[in-house]
Image (cartoon, rainbow, N blue to C red; front, side, top):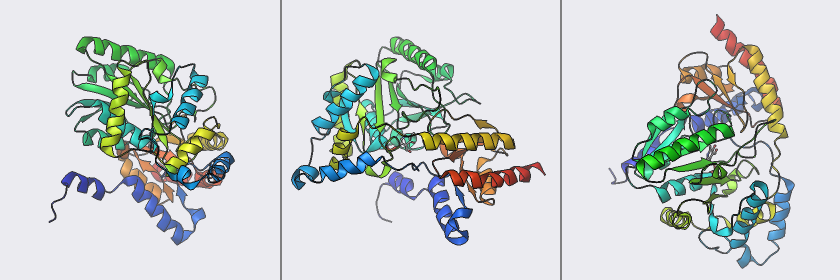
Length: 396
Ligand code: PLP
């Protein structure tokens, strides 16, 4: 056969449960009608991007084409980076500047860049299971080891003792994601303070920095009284990986950033390494039209009303039917216990009721499913009888 990279071949060839479920849903909708399939498989925002985005695009397009479409510096235009820094400073009382920000093609690139900027081969990164599956791909692609530490069952909060126990002299960092995909958990400040203390104890013990990579595409999506703490203010060696995919409903436009706070140890060197990783990975000059859009729309609020309504209907409906669910505090996913130990078998059974829900195996744990409720309200309304029938199937 052709001499290609075997690992890359396997990554590209490997079926993804989420994508397969989505493809199945499209085929099934064509077969029995879109209204009869309840597709909860994806994390594609159902709320349209705010009108100010379109207005900004149209306005930007009035400028000379070479300006609209030309290269920016590798780390992004100074204007958008300054606008983001000032927005963060207003919101969190920080003192950031353009030099602390690196524009990326979304959180995916932000995390991959951060890992590569920090890691040497064989370093370890801790992830909290269940976790966004690409973390492992990016960690291993940097030649590093992905160490899975289970979250607490059944609230899926951080198990800080277990995290501290998993830290070794080779630990380079930990990736956290709050509000969380897939569990909907939001980590409270008290736990993040405790995590920071644990990381500092280990830094002192081993005599080197341990980094916290805070993956925050859902930062703006939190319900009720839930506060999403600003992690760099709690732990100095934090890199923030942000994305506008969810907050402004722009997932296909690929725009986000890495924040390297000036308060971090050796911040300038770490920022240079972020630039180096962007260069090595080919992630230079994020889409320039959307750099300009973000510069103008940086303070546009995220509209979470529809997600909140969906969450309430789904959580209350499923709980009433007898399902065990983690009450979602943020993001747009509901984490529900499968009605049999094998989550894949449960997801297959759900399919027979036209319910497309992602088995927890995709996220590194057994026995649960993820229900993405970034869908039309009516999909949830119409799906509840199907969930009732699914429950009945397991009761006989
Ligand atoms: N991290 C988490 C937890 C996500 O859920 C996603 C997307 O769903 C990403 C990262 C990647 O986001 P982006 O579209 O910004 O690359």
